[in-house]
Amino acid sequence: MPFNEAFVPLRAMGYEGPRGTRKEEFGSVMALVDSIFVSARKKGMRMEDAFPQLFNMGNLENMRIMLLGGKPVSHIGISEVGASLYGCALKVGMIGAVCTDPDHRNKGLAGKVLADCMRKLLVDGVDFVMVSGIRSLYDRNNCVMAGRSYAYAITSRNAGMIRRLQCDLADYDPSMLGEVAAIYQTEPVRYVRSREDFSTLLGRRTYRRPKTFLIGMGGRSVAYVCVEVNDYGKGSGWVVEYAGSRFAVASALPKLLRRLSLEKLSLQVPHHDYEMLAALSRVRKPKPSHFGGTMRIVNPEGFLEKLRPYLACRVGEKARKLEIASKDQRPVIALGNERLELKDEKELTWLLFGQPEKVDERFKSYLRPFSVESEGELGRVLSAAFPLPTFLYGSGGTWLLARPPGSAPQAARLAFG
Image (tube, rainbow, N blue to C red; front, side, top):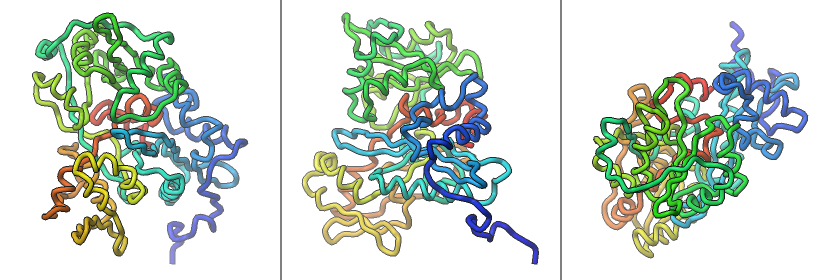
């Protein structure tokens, strides 16, 4: 019978892990990562410099690896960040920089490390995880495309259709950091960032190196916008992040086209951002999109508990009786005597965050028809409370090498490893 190493346990083949990175292994892990992710190298950067929030000595336990003979051969990076959803304090996991040495692929190493990451995220109290990629590896681990957003393409042809207010644009400099942080802190759906986080994210050595502008009205900064100019095609760019007055941001878009000499400026707006959708309502119908990767609910019961204040506001005190349980490894949503049994974890993520309205043809195989068929009080509660707001990566997720769906596909493929 021919030898098939696929059926030999990894440990028997001499592999060690998965586990966190040790201090003395940091350099060899970075050598592996740098060898795979050429997109940063094309910018003349090392991954350690391009994504300092992930690759640093304080995050070694979240740099999960497999080794052979003491040499790292497979890696997955984790970042755990706080988030606020209409006042509910959450913990979000972000996974990226997934890579395996070419000589060690097709042995299940990445799957082993990813399963270890999910275990660690649960132990660490993470509510849901965002993965910077769409591929079978993630699908097998119940990570799905979820969330809803709308992609706008602002050009000189349609910019004149935007309702504009008088505003001023100012190039960001470090003395404005406090203004940017104060504006961001007003966002109802956001990541939790320190002043040091902002200093890092707005620095010129990070991967995206966004051009940041403060938008002023009446002599006061009321919004900001971060724009990345596309390295893979001249004349285009996209808004990596915006915060503050939506009508101020919309009013600034035509100015940004001229200031940056762009033919097109892409912008993603999450479905819950009604004000931005209204500010851009005169622009042609946007393209349905999603946040650009895949998601999974890590801790359903704990996540629901944290959402109680949001749910009580949306549907009333009855929401406090809503429960999530498991029956034969299938999620069950309950309200009093009413039950809704879902097929698997994927459907739970789709229920809470919604399915994208539309995805690229190449990704359709990762979706299946899903709708909530529940009548009575449970059905009314679910339809009123969900889908939840969609978290986009923004500047806080730039270390993941994530890009808006449909932009720079070659770069995205390299980034996802």
